[in-house]
Length: 468
Image 1: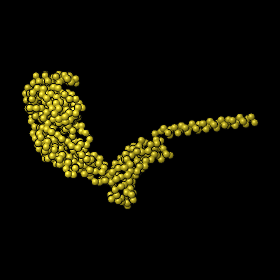
Image 2: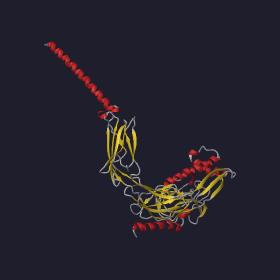
Image 3: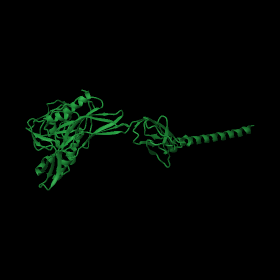
Image 4: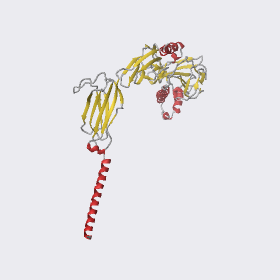
């Protein structure tokens, strides 16, 4: 009896060892399956949301993705009564991303034709990957996308706009954009984009636009697009007035370079190693100038999203009893010793005015101060936001009397004239910008121009919006 017990005990030990080995193998196998990339458990993904708009003219772009590779897919369209398979494929090779273009089936497929008048469709996407998960069947994607058919383009109604625009000048347009599923719209003029401000009621907008003085040709359009991809472009009807701008040849003297130019070189550490006179001139007149202008452009591109009820502007008259000493848009060529030796060029993008030394500079219209510091060649340069994307800047000031963030009233003395920056004599460089584009100050200093191009446009638009 004792011998049999020992033999049974041995068999039990062997049986237990076998089960332990099997258990370890199962755990190891499970760990392998759980961690192996070939058994990944993530279903394929698709780029479409649960609801979309479709104009049926443009193809639907369906992007499928999967980490282990796509195995097959099928896409169906249902109009509520009939269903058509519009795409299916068994994918060979290791393809982890696939973009499928789905055209609306205008003709019968396998004898089935969708209702062309259906305004609601349903898109069903089924896809599998090449994972060994799910008993080697792979992970499955099943996605249902509801579609609203929309083939109507957005409406753009131009209510009123300035009659004309001058090269280098400004104009105003008030318009309406309507669509039940509007995606976006923008105003493009002269190669630049202008942000429109909500005006009076939802769907109505106003914006100032500008024709850059250094561009020969000009067009202005409003483009709107809805969620279905329908797009409309409306031209802003403006009579174009050409204008020539002055060209000047300026002799760059050693005194000028060794004086003002060298002073500005010394103020900027990155230019401090420049030795040659002509290299100094180019560094200030071109490199520094462009950097200073970029700073100005960025400041003046900021436009509020808040709806406005009205916008009033009076003519600008920043310097009392002033004489014009330099024109806007002047193309300046700098030569050294002889005109045949042109060494630099630039554009003058403001109006220079002079009266007495350290004369008071006035903000003719209310606004918010956006800069109160020096800006390279412009010297001390306060800058004011007057709303609707209209900005004024005042260069070469000796003293700035306002601070960034201040709300100034019309008639406020904001600074005093001077000769800071690249200025040889005491004067004011007066600049006006429309959303980052320099424009002719003379227009905004003319009461008649403002009345004809701003006030009348708003009055005409208000009659339509207010229904009077």
